[in-house]
Image 1 (cartoon, helix red, strand yellow):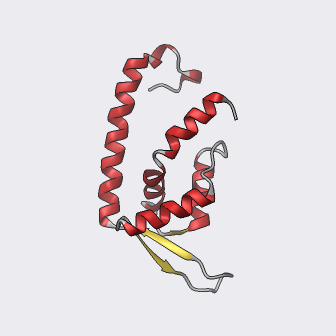
Image 2 (image 1 turned 135 degrees about the vertical axis):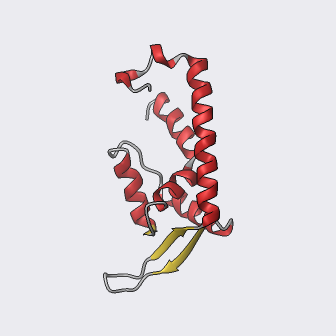
Length: 122
């Protein structure tokens, strides 16, 4: 892992709750399915460790931002599914707004319009 990717991983780690809530906005999912959705969304370039995700699920449930339930066993083993709550949707919206505002300030301070790789800056 390069120094740059370690820094990016630290930034992403701080937003794990919001990332999981974002995935759940698309519908109920079981734990490993959320892991795969995150990996696929980044084209396989980033994965959040399963242990980190399961700790996140427990925290989100404890805080009332997600609810869990057991699915049936018709397709193999019994899976625990997660669904976002109204409180979770509100937190997601608030966190995304905070991220957008923060990104705007950091972009301005770093003048990334002159240094963004591959034209990725807005």
